[in-house]
Image 1 (tube, rainbow, N blue to C red):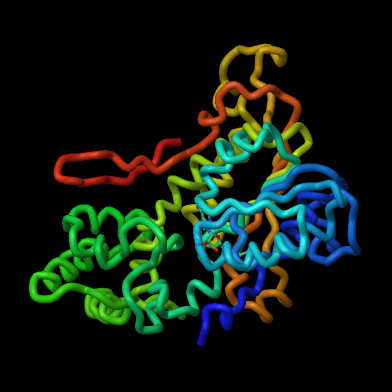
Image 2 (image 1 turned 30 degrees about the vertical axis):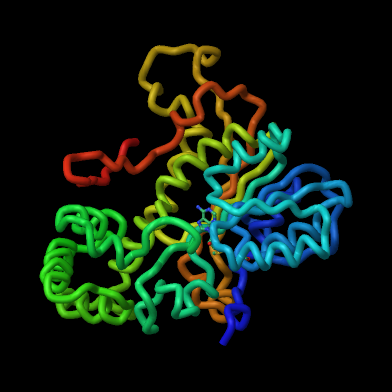
Length: 357
Ligand SMILES: C[S@@+](CC[C@H](N)C(=O)[O-])C[C@H]1O[C@@H](n2cnc3c(N)ncnc32)[C@H](O)[C@@H]1O
């Protein structure tokens, strides 16, 4: 099977794009999930997670002939798919790399502000379904797990060199796994006799330690999620990008962000809440209305997949779309609105994750 045999069913397609381009978007309206007739929205837009271009294609159908769409992805195969789209549609501009570079990349191209940015976080179905990528605990393949296969260390390389403490912290914090320490110890014990090289080797080893299986969940689910997040620096990328999005959005510009697990969703939710109510922490101080900091975002709410979508695409079950709109308030410090995981440096490469509100 070639990589192009794997397809991606785009999650929350209508709502994610309609939120960016339709002025009257409202999370309570039923029509938001519909695919609407072609539109004529002007401006510059960004799809930070091109994947196989499901959102990008529909977004392009809603944009004017003069609009521009910058697409990013770390994955070389996603970029190959983007190049095909670019041949059909010259409004598309492709940037291979992490979406955290969007501000710099857009500035280099003379773009200071944009009208809409979408992120559909995590990995795509082709990445999970292609055993050779190493993301799936169900399919035997090399323990790779890199979205960008052209750089960085693989999961197998990391598991061979990380300390027990580092593995424990990653599995505990990024997988929210109760058995993080016994898993880390089991990995360490195992690698002393032979290295962990494949997905099923890791999945089976974790299964021997995680004895309480959550309903409908493989015992290695949380461990695989944690290692993937760590290898791809997913939370650091998201934190940096949320700050960039606040700076990049033009007044009235919108962001649509889909998350698939609580760590990501918490970051997006907290960022939007802080930017929409910057005075919340000052509420007890005797300040006049005119002295209160003004919102830089309007929180437009969250959208979940409909029952019909979940039935057709079970991966949409855990998806949460959050939408916000930039106000006209000048932004002085975007980072102040972002909660980020702190990877505290220590000796001998030890790192510890924690949260700063
Ligand atoms: C859920 S898929 C997106 C699917 C896409 N919306 C579609 O309809 O085809 C997520 C994609 O984002 C990419 N990705 C995840 N994190 C990224 C990051 N920090 N920078 C760039 N691309 C990233 C992954 O490689 C993957 O292709």
